[in-house]
Amino acid sequence: MNANNFLTSWISSRTLAALCCAGAFIFATDLSARTDEVLLAGVATVDITPKKPVTLSGYSMRKDLSQGVHDPLSARAVAFGYGGTRLVLVSADLVGFYGGTAETVRKAILEKCQLPASQLFLCAIHTHSAPSLGLEGSDAHPNNIEYTEWLKQRLVDVVSEAMLHMTPVRIGAGSGSSPVGVNRREVFLDKAGKPQIKLGRNPNVLTDREVQVLKIMRADKDELAAVLFAYATHSTSLGPKNYIISGDVHGLAEQFVEKNLGGGVVAPAFAGASGNIDPWCRVLPEFKATNGWIPEPVLLGTLLGEEVVNVAGGIQKFDASGPIRTAMKTLDLPRRPIDATLAKPVEKLSPFNLTVARVGEVAFVGLGGEVFNELGKAIKAASPFPFTIIMTHCNGAGGYVPTKPSYDEGGYEVKTSPYLPGAGEQLVQDAVRALQELK
Image 1: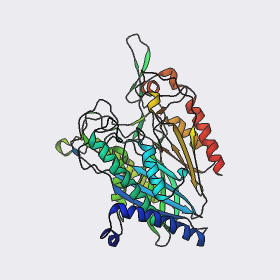
Image 2: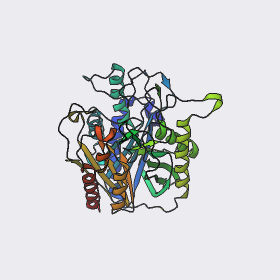
Image 3: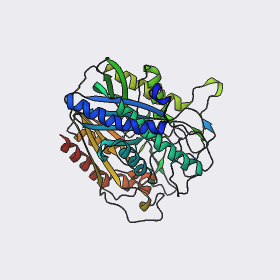
Image 4: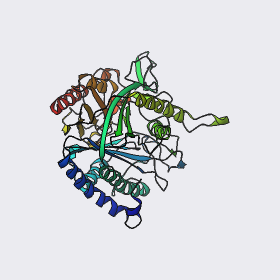
């Protein structure tokens, strides 16, 4: 993390984090008192690659410890301020915050940095090649419990640094398209000739391929500070036979954008509505580089990153005004009765949290689960804002939220979802209503 060199020479990182949070609160408050009409933002990044072998997340059949690192994991933060109100967006190269870890990590950040609950979007890119998280007293591997505690402090650090370095900015939004993601609900005929659904590739289903980009420019220096982007796909180009740590599609795209643009630009990625979307090349056993060939996960991440850079380069219209408004609600989505046959028992899943925010005319929708692509598209279409960024795996881990028609089709997502048919459509209504209340 890019901390102040003088400070880091004589105080510990833990002390620095506390001072940064306190300093950020004073800094933002003082600035807003003098410049109520100025939009502020700060960005930061911190390495969260585990130092010890850990169990990896996303596939229950994978039990052994990791065997190396292909590319580093990071957490990236963007902190906005306007008129005394703040909004912090965090993108972590993890599968998600499961097993109560979302609540624990959020509490640490909110308390240290004096943020109301609705002003923090704690998100994961959903890479299945990152450590699983676990709290003390859980059945997680000791290395993972140790990692989770260390990670919590690292996330406090990255938020505090972003808040401390808020300066006047201008923001602009744009969108492109990428073929990296594809509907994964492949239809096949069983022995009786009846259509069934399996996880695979179904390119016949039209999907929302939008690449959403938010460009943040420092107003005082007229230089690029960050390129935030969201895209709907699982980061599962690597499968359960892979034991090498990686950010997978989203993480590799982040790294490509940052290296391509240079200058310390931060590129936080967010997984869009991708409950039924996988990358075109999926669940590969390893990074294959036979005869110098570029591995498919790198190709996919590069392809997505190229479109992010292309869209960012075309954004020419910027805004430096507010307001910032936020809201957070735990939704009462209709749930199935507790069923021991579910892969993820209902009682072990967290409540479904919906978090919404606006910065000027750009809106953010944080969804605490794995939401089907069609539902995210419906939220964007009905949003009262001209640009609405969808972020899943945000502030919780509430499980799969399929569309109502998919329950008749069946498949993995429907079988493991804790919700009854119609929950997804209710989610869309709740999200749109919450956005309307921000206007």
